[in-house]
Image (cartoon, rainbow, N blue to C red; front, side, top):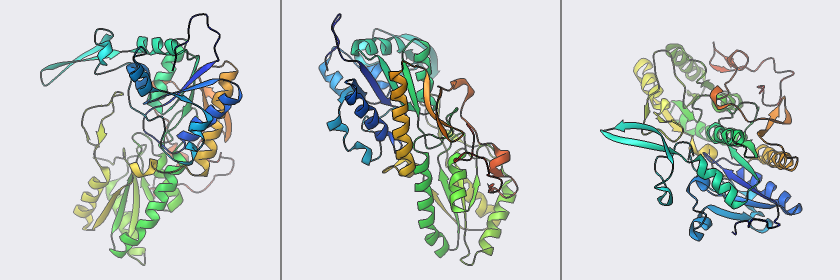
Length: 402
């Protein structure tokens, strides 16, 4: 890919990237933007590996350019929407907190923090200046960033620095603020529901309590909606259940079931009174550490307190795998086209969203506000540890307002 020359008359050029964990539906966004660009004679440049493309790219090195930059066209995106994942690949790079500088920048960058681990000083660097340089050198006039809270928090920072940018929310946790829906959520619920329905036969055959763990570090949307669709109990981060009561309800479910089994689904960030979820490993670029498996902890307590045998199943990564379902493909295509329309109109700092069940453009969320949470009062039965099924008239299709 050639850099734009000063004074040269060139086609308008836009960039697109995917950051954070992959979900089904991302490729549909990439294709929709690329196809629209081809109709308007606008170049669409794919930035590979998320924000890493703009921090680690050495624009003078052809090998680096081919590693991080891919021109997108109708031919190389024609069939990508038929499969999951992201053809642009992804990373959890935070350009504001790079732990190791790329070789060509060893003498550049400003340390933003200094800490000590095992007696060794550790630095991180803010490479936002490098990001801006690379966007300018690539001739990218507008950037479309697809991601969750972490990816979009940096998109908001670039917008404040004058970069023209549009965001698209994706995460199977469905916890991005200002929208009722994020790409990947529907497919995640479909995957979780299918897995639980399949595993009923095994849990029932062995007459046990089945415990399923799904993603949801801070918000319980995935667990709650899975429970809603499969008619089982759930535990969410927004509400600490009484453990003895939960176990009693599960034992009652089991004994009242002709097949002598019961099921419960837990968010990965779920807790109960007296229990604090354990974390381990190095924090990622946005400060998140891995969480211990809460399903295993609950299984231990059920065995200890009630003497019941359990089967635990970690569904987390399976929920983001494979092809998108209809809703994710529909929303992804629409969000992509909305972001493209915003770009044509010269708008910046906006995000494609669903609000009150309608498609809208909203401000990129303020990262300081954190993740969107479930409204426990209207969605979660705190006596039965189940979703609330009553009083849905007038709510948008995904039952929670943005």
